[in-house]
Image (tube, rainbow, N blue to C red):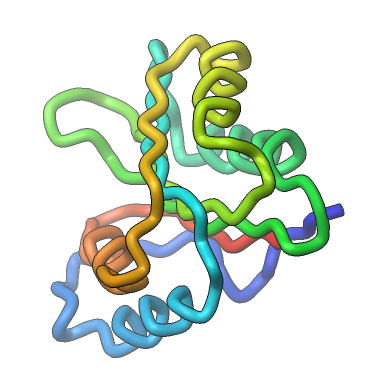
Length: 141
């Protein structure tokens, strides 16, 4: 069973990436894993930071099958409306369409599940979120 890594969690910052020394390190750290997918999850209702965390903990139980499965996620505030949406890196035995279909079934939202491009690296997928004003993020695996 997966567990939450306590080294991650709620972060509030208004600094840019260059003034946040750990952002690059986090991105490099993410590169050590063999991610399968980069996902964006939205819901038809307003998602708070607290409900984002509950949702991702629940999805970890549904998507992370097997001992090698892992997930890194970050909640990002919408620019033009209230609430948050989720971005996630997932390593799982589940097929791309299965993750998408299961998410739609559970949350009636819009999932975008793309193959992870290891040539872009962890910083490409992560650095955007560390520069946002308020985010929540975690590593589960």
